Image (cartoon, rainbow, N blue to C red; front, side, top):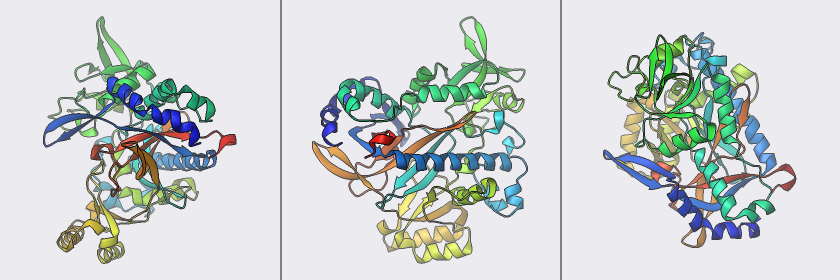
Length: 444
């Protein structure tokens, strides 16, 4: 396989030039200043055998189905709480739980239509789920566009290597929109070009033949959503919204929001619009709730989890708190409210003063933190200034849930550009690779 990659590696510079020309960037706000930068592409793909992919696909689908059942339960009967599987005060103290979503039943009972599940592969080959992203998971556009550019730059690579085609993501996504649509056009709603993932919003609108709408383009009349057009207005049946819950509707959430759609939650509650993903999903991808996902699978599906969580401890429980405090130096500590690689602290990197401060925070704010064993996950080869080196990498897999659950046979492989870092997020300066899933008769 390595020999057949040489032409692709040799064209990496051209591919990155094309990405820059197309504006494939990642925007970051830092110190109140918006900066756009290229999302660096590495030409050596992550290669996953069909056997591994089958296990991953089954495990990811199982996990997403259970998480959707949890969301449906939490915003209605709350049976999982009544049966003592998940503590009541743990759920309702989550910043992702939205009382405003109580009693709303989305189309087909589906809450997370596009799930981004972050995994790492340990050095023994086993896979661990690190995080579930059920709100606005980004990143599918990057491997999608780079696969197309790679095919143009090095067509022989894709003739000689037997890789599952990933170019159907737009079709899969459009099918989800159509399955959920309550009558009208499909819209991707973006807060605008200063959003970190604006490139993706525009690209996916093109891929799904959807309208790309910005603040001011959509409005609600009599609990029905419309999009402004040159001729007047057109009814909207599904909105893939790429803004957070807090800013979605100033009449329901933050009144100061200038990028929301006033009245959209009333239209949603009335069943006249599909919101993709559903508001309130944050209660299920809370880093603390992550601890309970294997229990959800057992509870709702009566199955054993196919994919494992990283070994995780909740200081919320006294026994776990005692363990965490006694082993702080060897654990990774995560702030449940943070994302993008922020709020991730390795005990081994802290001096005694920082360890004491962290211990005090865990004692006084136990719900705010989780602790995990450090998984020494796989290094993958990348090209760095013409040389091949090894760097830590994760995988964001995308699971689409419409009439059926489908796992996209691709994914966003992110890698650290720092030889000593386990943090791979794009917001932390990481790069990305294509993810190749091999067809069954051509396993690596």
